[in-house]
Length: 184
Length: 398
Image (cartoon, each protein chain N blue to C red):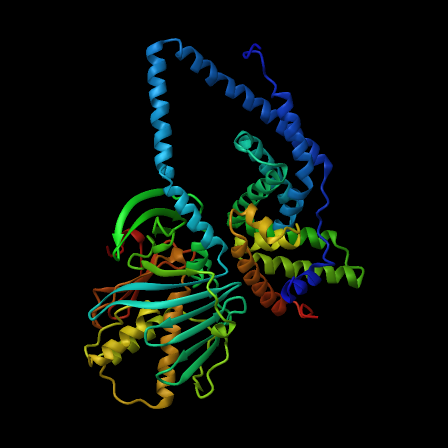
């Protein structure tokens, strides 16, 4: 094969990667939305995640399930980096609120309640440190078990269980203070 | 799933997120990914060509082989080629999976007659901790519920606390020692070799995680941890030594009970620390100087060392205050608590330092405490006369 003229990726490798991409796009996008509470930011970060994955794909060596955990790990780092930019973080909150307010119709009581709950949830989750935000989101929105979260975060299931308990206690405290019906 | 988890799941059940994927974005990203892969392939081809060109010369081939061999050996040594890396990895796995753990923490002090303070710890998942000092003072904490009890046998008193509005900084969390241990990576940054510690020959491994430098000393025969040393470069003098490790020992739930002993009386402490300020610290510092005969500031700010140090000072007759009413004593206790809490709550990036040991109140030239408030470029420096100035970092005392 003339290497100089080859300008397209190895077809087999590209096919595999794209298949894995399509398999995991929804989960990674949803994870980013649940962490950032803003779909536009979530789309930006999702793009970063998969571009990063392409960059480092040759270093990856594992099963399809491990690839999924690997993507969640990249996504966690990308989301945390996104949130760490303080000014953008504040803008996210403001924009998210504006988008939610503009999109959510408050015609019905149930929609208004959902909107209030979402606002309370967002503030409560953002009051946690990033690691706890990650664990709560992976557990309750992506439905990963503690041992799976441990794989994503390169930690131990025991540590994840401890941190999950503490994160929930902090959420309960915050939500009980900010949302009257939390304990109902 | 426990009640806490069920409660949260019930809460989020009917919350609607705008999380439906947009397949326009998905398709557009796919094109970007294909283009990125194509670029990568082109870039990777060129070094191959250079390698092949260079390898035409036999001399260059031999030199390249030598470099590769040396690099491989360096990597093996870094991983502890004789199996040392396996010892470390095995011990870390035990740490990760232990559901209970007991150990002692030894804090070094610079206090005369009090060279070190030893406290025993017991930990049980998901978040129970019990500490015991050599004098029998016990503290039990349920970190999931943020509740605790401190039991003082000499006084037959106890304090129950629920720290409300605690400005929670993860780097100042008392559980940080446990969690940092349990989050150690499976591979050490550095293999230190062998050292004799307390009569045993131990192998050392160093791992730097964030702003903590951990040195783990392991018995290669028993694969037990002989000692863990933690150093905090941002807080010089705050090193921690942990020893006497035992894992998965049977720890009865009664050890972590928050119920006080029957014949003990409650010491009331108002624990809302939401509004502790720098003024609380200044008042506490001044208060201490009214207690000591020589008008000096506290010898330490370490909350574990302080009770022990204070007892020693009392034995040595260094306190000169007269009798106080019960009400005044309670006011003093509250001020002490608030002053120490101000410091305990400071985040790691505040880079706080205390330098008041042996400094007398009134000495305006000597700084006794400094810290950087959140979001500030300058440091707040408290001097011996308890005046405060804003000082740039480069002008801080060395």
